Image 1 (cartoon, rainbow, N blue to C red):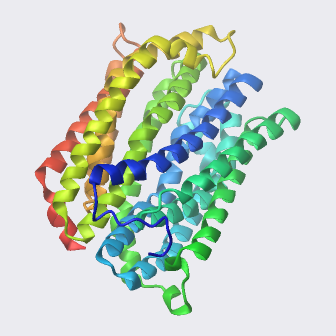
Image 2 (cartoon, helix red, strand yellow):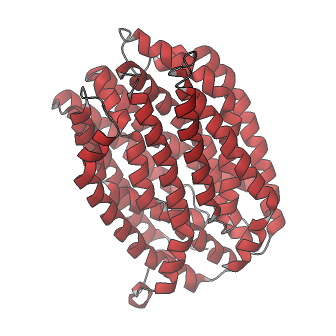
Image 3 (cartoon, rainbow, N blue to C red):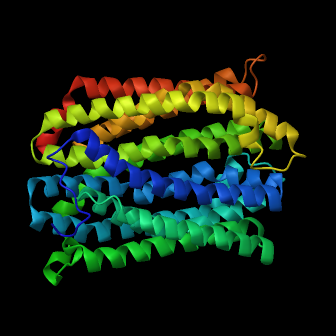
Length: 451
């Protein structure tokens, strides 16, 4: 083994492997969401509710641009996991080397587009005049940090591919602490508003990326590349794009659908926009166990498919489904009865209408949490097995559901802006159904043999 954290998941108890692998990912993702929430709390409490809406208006856009640049890391991780499972160290090193070219080129293009077109994009989304200038400034700053996001996600995906989910956690914790400290310094000490929050975030992300790269080079032998390893391999680059691009496009389409929904939200005024930002932040936190489980399943499935052990993949899917069910049942009463207090963390008590809206919205979406989890589980298995082409179908499903439901439900007088959150729940339900049906179809078994 290259180091003590590398784990071969093709042998041993699947449930134990998945849970052991998921826990560090979950802790890391929670820390990542922590600094997203701190951004919102600092802005909402120490700048203004409108500034919070300005940051929220960029949420889906940031997701879109980050997905375009770092979504390719999923494809890179799938290839690496399959080569690791097959015991092919030479090809694994080539995958790592060529990931540099894939991630750097994608990040550069997306960064330039985001900075140049920030203003027309946010005006196109009908961002209210009260905070459109803040939204533009915040979005441009965060786009400047996309290179850090891409490289951190790339290194983390490669480490997970060889069974190391612990190390990326340490760098996320460091990044989170730096982000929280800089948030307070830039906003409270230097009065930099939303620009300070954005700057704190990109500095923290850059630190995580640099630290992860240094660690990987020094501690994991697969990352010690020789000159001949660094020669561009067009076949490997093509495979990285072939597997990663559909996932990047899936995330991008999901982001586009969220942007479309954000435009509907903006039409209902600042209070609804602020409440939507709050519930989004909360539910991003709720999604972390599902997302962490999904990342664990992708690496687990990739290794086992590389080792030609399809039945272990099936067993992993079953165990993960039970975990999702248990967590979803636990979360339901928490948000049903304590939603008002949770929403109150984000804004001052004077913004009572925002808090009440957010609490009622959580009662609408929380019954759909199991469906949300069942988007992540089958999708992760399919991605790990190389059936990433389905990601396009998955993304298209979310786009259609969000656009259609939002534009129909919010126009029904008795529902009005509540249709926004009903749209979210129904979108999760339909997308989960499509994902489960694809998994049950079994095509992933044959896709795995193509690579």
